[in-house]
Length: 476
Image (cartoon, rainbow, N blue to C red; front, side, top):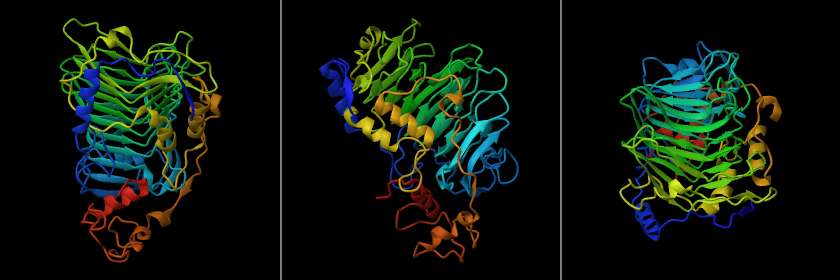
């Protein structure tokens, strides 16, 4: 892909900052040895979302909103027993209300057949998934596309994480929210140790039924209500944001730890890219290796990629910034804009921040990488659906726009309704599908094995090896 760069594509940072960042990269927080993290290749602050390990394996066998075999029945699990939700069905689940995801769960969308599973709302005033007062949650390879609620609502996100810790969200496709597409919220509590990685956040709805009016938003990190709130140790890694009015992303934070914004693409906002506020507390933000691109919807007076607002005398914002690029995809009029606004340039620091949790990719490589890897896709088994394919094409060609209605992009993609009992057939009842066991010399689909027993081939448990293979995770 060819990007026309602005004359000053990389933020103006002091040499000492670059040296400080280099030292930080040499001591990035490790993901952990095989079997210790959420899954092979998982990274960021949410990597230790492991409370589901050792649990039951439960099959989702229906696209019904609720009842036996439903995603709701597995994901909510009010007892918070450790469990994995696997899928024998594919298609769209229409929800009458949000699924309140409980603790100690891995929702493994990569196990669904065909084009996977799409969630949308047809009732209620919230988005499809809410992770609230929960811990140790992994959600992967789902399409979260709520659409507008029937009645006006300020709370329709694609996914909301509130008062939660140890949460790993990966390879999601999120669109058609009427509030934030992704929101981390804290209310008289703590939200921490959270990763959103390798996902597509696109096409939030602008002039729809949000009570505040125009409200197409990307991500709001650490929104808050009440008192005694703590929010931090959050990673936004390798995500594609496209076609939002603003909040790409908006960040607050407190002194419990930083917010990392690393290797993301921010394409075609209307009025603003990202903003950082000191309203919740001292906000430490690492903004590294990102690409900010204007598009057809972007206002002529293009804002900086990061704007800082210091409104509380007792709080401060500190930024670690390096290797960020601004520009315009070939096909649109070139826009010249800076990475940092004047306030942000004065808030850069070169030391005293925690080391980054990952080693960033060079910004020059991130566009090609994300357009080939982000979203609900699995190499060799699941391609991007028509909506995500168009979004990625928009980034290449400088096309597309912020929308008001789902119909403007052809509606929800039509995913084939697939029920595949053969994929879930488990003759010996050990939780591992017969088809996978048959391909392993050390397993027998007719003799029960412990799915959590050690797999000498990968160093993981057998069930973790299966989940990783289904997702295309690195097992080398």
